[in-house]
Length: 283
Image 1 (cartoon, rainbow, N blue to C red):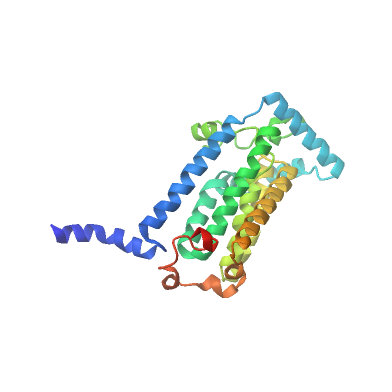
Image 2: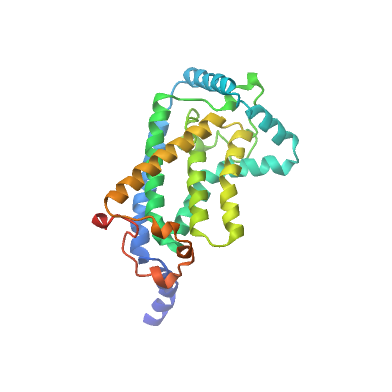
C-alpha cells in the first residue's frame, strides 16, 4: 500500500520540488491573487454607471480625440474588417484572452521560472488595478461599439465568447473603458517579458505584444486610443509608487536590469526566500 501511495504521490512531490517554494509557496500566492482578482472584478461591477452617462462620456472622448487629431478608431476597425478574415479573428482572440488568460499565465510562468521578478510584477499589477478603479466609478465611459451612429460595429456580437456571456455579464462592466486595463497589463507583461527573457526573438515578440493588444481593443471597438493612453498613465503611476516604496525598504532593480539574470536556472531559485523581491522588512 505504501509503495502504491508513493507512486501516486510522486508527480505531486516532483512538481513541488520544481516550484521555487514548494506547493505551500504556490498556494500562498494563489490565496493572494485569486481573491483579489474576484473582489476587484465584483467591485468594478458594482461601480457600473448609467448607460446615458457612459455614452455621453464616450462622446466626450471622441470630441477630445478630434481636438487632438487622434480619432482614428473607425479607420482601424474598417481596415481590420476589410482585411483577410484571420486579422479580425486574431483581434477578437487577443481581446478576450489577453486580460486574464495570457496575463495570469505569464504571471505564473514568472513565479516558477523567473521568481526574482515575481513580487514586483504582482505588486505593480495589483496597484494598477486599484488605481484604475476610481476611474470606473467617477467617469464611467462606454466603448466605441456603443456608438453605432458614428459607424462603429461590434464584431464580437456573434462570437462564441461575447459581451453577453454569463461570466462577462457577471464580472464585466460595459462602461469601464476609461482607463484601459488591457493596455496597462499588456505593457506591464510585455516589458517584463523583454526584461526576463534572453532569446532575441522571444524578446521581440514580447515587445510587440502591447501593440497587438492595443490594435485588438480598437479593432473590436472596445476602447478608444485615449483609453489606452490613460491605461499607460495609470501603469506608469503604479510602477513609480511600487518602485519608490520598495527602494525605501532597500530593494534593488539590479536583478531585472542584469541581462544574465534572465538565464537564472531552476537550481538557483529552488530554495529562494518565501517572498523573493520583497523589501527586506517584508520577507
